[in-house]
Length: 504
Image 1 (cartoon, helix red, strand yellow):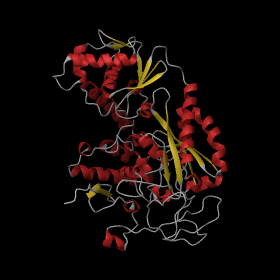
Image 2 (cartoon, helix red, strand yellow):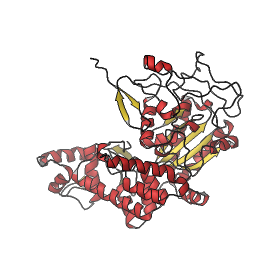
Image 3 (cartoon, rainbow, N blue to C red):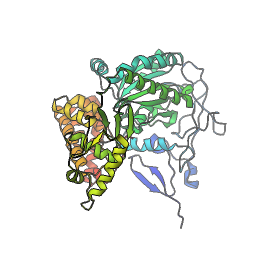
Image 4 (cartoon, rainbow, N blue to C red):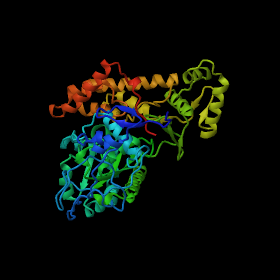
């Protein structure tokens, strides 16, 4: 009997099936490609390879015929079988086309692991391969939202670095918020017109859960720079484009504020594009740091939402804490008056057999990391106080600022923690914000939650969203709700379906 590991194939419903004879393929993504006769004979698919279609302002050229050499940039990523075009004939979708980059993946010689994982997430979110992004903010809403967004302060730097490059190269620069909503889309006029055909416009949501695999949406999902080339996109209308994006973080808290993106034709299909957009994101963060208010002397800031390991900023240092130290800092930040040793022991450990000696050893290591003047004892407390992101969300909710609380909520508090005290804080904050969003009934706020990694299976929120969205936006929401209710009736629960919900 063979001992080879089974390979994964994806069904059109988005479920992961294990099949020793199957290959990872994007045929399930395409929805219209069929297996060739060779699949029945040899277990492999025959795909029609194609050359690059013309980018904006470039002369037309025909698709590569089978057997001709690929581009010097590498192999064509796998994609749906498309009709052959004669020389000069435009591609079946509007917009520039990108030359492929080399790709790699386990179990397949062509699909990159990052892309394959993104396709799976897109399928689980029931993204339609032939759909289009939804425009959620009208002009008035967009203007108000942009004016109040932290990234507005970084736009002069972003435009200075990217504006001329985008216009001269017939590309687009785009900036989105942490929920994947496009706040600014600027660049070459002709490319802007072509981009409107797929709703790549300001006010549209391009998160991965809403629009499938794309550079800004996937960069937000994995919290790192991402380039997506041509057929690596999940949706067919976007496969004529290439994009590279990098997340932008708050320089104090480390939370994701959004992403900066460059989108355009095949000339962007180069590693330099990814490095360029990453450098722009770092410049934007530096600009925000220069403009931001300096933290109060001796006061720390703690980012623990959506992270398994908290990030502490103190005295010009940024320290990534271990999971146990993260739990200790969260509990001490929540109780600035201090916590006694016996109580802290019960808040940290599920196991009653853990002794105070273990706790003291952890606190000793934490004191060595932070400095003797930061962590005090009898009771254990933080000197100078700490500004915690989860406490800020809690204050927003207490004042009735639900929209601001939703914007600042970067995910569940230390989602991998099982410390009893942290679990109670996490469930309390999540429950309060969730209830406030449902009570408010704002479709934009509900969509931010529903299309997040922590809300993708939240039946209550999806029901509220279904009742709140305009009729034109209802079909995909209704489809997702029907799918969740079918899973519930079949006995599937969130606990039975683990999914990614952290940003590291």
